[in-house]
Image (tube, rainbow over all chains, first blue to last red; front, side, top):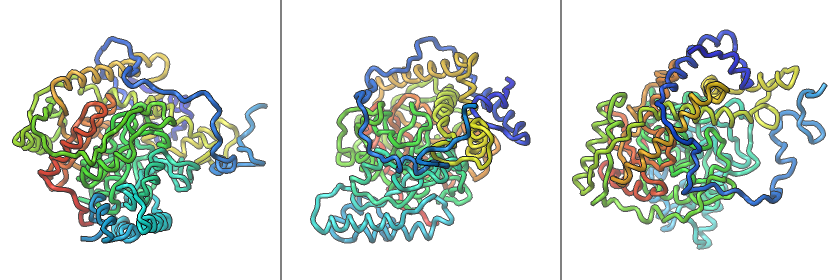
Length: 90
Length: 484
């Protein structure tokens, strides 16, 4: 199958350099032709395990264990206690 | 014997008999890191100061006569995708090259509460995607048994450190074999617990329905002790099981009389080295002599497991790794002129090629028009695999297979061809798909390299698995650090 690597990259917010494109195309085609060999199985694919149901936490506000400064310490760019990103609205 | 060569179980006893201090043990391990790690490359971060201060704190507690956990004062290394407060957690990716978590993973909370001494963070394939640790952005890890060979992956640093003696025990993570496979290549014990037995809170997510944290050690007792320390319910992980666990290490028993060992023919077919099959079968026959019963079983959907695994795990990864966008933490590209431009450049520069392939495969199988043919089909195959295991466990107590289709390959050998690399996971992926526990235990050497036997168990029956592995260990002896 022909895989449109540039299209997939765009969907996944990736860019593939031109010099690597043909290698990526070849690899993706061989990976897809490997994984597509699957039998026809019918059934419901919900995948839920009735023996071990998931348990959600109570819907209550979390106790704030971390300070704003701790949470923002990893941000690449900050100004006035806020994360800086490029302009998103014209 | 030097302190770094001892097992956690032996050191635990020595600490209580005042034959050594935690500081002496920790220094011995730190010295071993210094003398071997330029060759092995297991560590990404060494926490010398923190480790020594924790060790002294534990020694003071012992001196005061406090009752401490069996693993108190024992050094441990941690895979670099497990969040450690205040200590770099990079997932061996440029994307997280500078990321310092503001919180501890659940398992790190348990390790700290048990007064274990963290010596550092260990190398891995980037975001745990790979089978050789060659996908690390930072460095290659070498197999201590043969430095020209890979340690396996993705928890390659965790396995290599244990094998080299630069850690007494380690934590790894296993999504498709990432604990068991490197354990097998490096001649160590590695346990992938039942899905839900160990909280994933603070483990950087790869494929959330498959990921589990587990122990690597030089012997079964140490692995059982560490597993007992990290398992248990955590409300921060919605898939965490709420149940009681036995004292695994205290209940270890190598008597296999009456144990029904299933041998599935599909794991002894094409694609698995004859010498590995032989090492595994010889071991199973030895257990038969000790009273175990061999049952021939069949798991016919095994041949589709690898395909289903790569579809499901990549689909989940493409969603999980969407969070890495250069906004709130980690790497951000230098120059950009719009938000989309920043996202695309950050992700293209921050992720390595294998991570990009998996994200694109996941994007592909989830995209409209392909979802039913790939993702849905893979989930149905996964359910079929679960059914076949359930049926098999009606006739046997555990299942024995090779842990890997071969022994450790050479660095660079499989790097050109992703599908060849993926095939190294052929014996291990079914276990993650079915959410079962499995252990890899050394079963002798093949052409001078360690071979691993995998036992697969019923859900939450780690005790039977560990007992069987303990019986295998009695045949071959406990591993000790190899000369590097």
